[in-house]
Image (cartoon, rainbow, N blue to C red; front, side, top):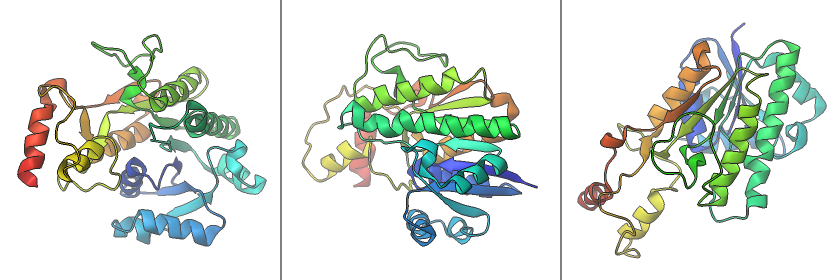
Length: 282
């Protein structure tokens, strides 16, 4: 029997690329958490999310199966039979679901980014008790560093310098829950920077983070970027992030570790270089 992987956030930006790379591995079955009222709606949501990845879309109903539920709900909002089916069959969990908004109150965003993590951990613990969990890979963010400056290591994050948004705070609190489970579960934590399009094609499906000011700039609504021209822009291509997450899933040596999925500082573009490239492209 092959590996059965439960993936949250599979309709999102990072999750889509992770799903595609996992299906390139042999003997992998993906159970993808989807919010929907029934199986037909769940399949439609996956088809919409993966419309530009024909191999992934073609796998729906074969090696990819939607699992109806919601990370915000206890026991993932699933019928007991469905939930127990996951407990008995799944051996690896990838938690990539997240609320990416930065302009919402902490209580609202925590429903996904904190309580959602708690619910996924409960599933992981039940799997581990049932037959042994191979790995839980939690997708955090480099911005759990919040207001800290200087060198940020891959150890536990800290809240002593505060956070610049409710998003950062909620991701810090969610990661803290996962880190507290490391003694009991085989956990690995990924901390990507600002994820941008594919390094070869530029393909992207979520126009947030750095794309928001770039869109304003290209449409003439932002004449000046409010940052130093020599500021390094902490971007990382989605294919690199997805490849790293899949390696964390497959390599037992990742257990118990945290990985910054970022580009070396000296290789990052400056704000001036980024704007020059965008201006030239436009």
